Image (cartoon, rainbow, N blue to C red):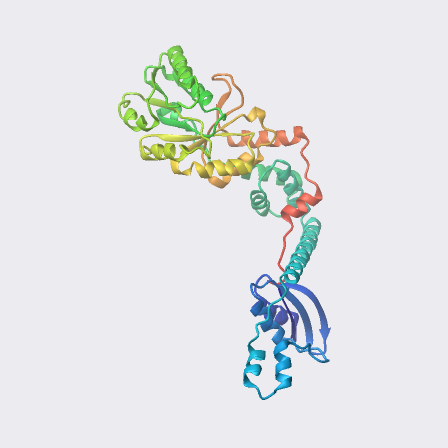
Length: 407
């Protein structure tokens, strides 16, 4: 680590000089008034002992005799010896590793404590100045909404509104952030490949959409492709569905045969493709995505997401399926979710367009076109019914503005 003292006529000039000497990660250790103006003691972590030696050279030596070293003893014994004098000048400084690590850890601890105190002060100030914003941030946190999205909504609040008006404004804004597809495929048809991880409800969602199409348009122009060869009985399920609806069912021998099979089904208005449930660590996962990407111009991938999955896992799933270029998302298992804020946050962040939501196993009753306000209302109701709460400590850590003192 590196510790310096900086004296300047004003605090602003002293802080600017500290930043120039130590960088953006400097931490202020102490400050006091002096006859020359302001004296600031600051520290920062450095990468080598050479920088420490340079800083020690800047610091005036303390009164009293310097500790003797082997090289300095040689100079005292023979002051005229130029080799010994050169050794004194070129011996590099190296701090003891254990001591440097201990001091660095103490510096990190001090920085964390300082940032925590600043966050507490900032949150207390916001609570005093903007009570409506604070109440809204609390409610959005209880819904499970991501921090950045909650902040974005709160920053847009008009001035002079009360809590009830702020609540209506926030829920409307959140609904407007959600992108929807409508029932485009239910009217126009298309080629849909349902993709996603294992157990999210791809086959059940496909069956619900197939039944909805058959009830509205008949099954003569409907084709089902059972491309899931990983799950035992998956093809038999689609065969039974096709027989029940009177729709054609095709089973490719290999997943790589899917593009060739699609070129033979141009006479069907709606083609629904059931794909294998993917484990993100499966060696075949990348190859299957490549097959879907190769025929992206002839089909639309629908990424099926489960609402009872954690937001961080949903974000990773969306990221890993990006090579398939999904055109829409289908949100399942709303009836099993304890919170919808995380799912809505992921959809807003990734700008995935939502087509349908599913909240049960009944075919086709438990599938509905996505409605933004309905989803937001359901998220609010879930937070209320589950008794979700956000205490002051959580809110302070999420929304306290921390300013690095060395910046």
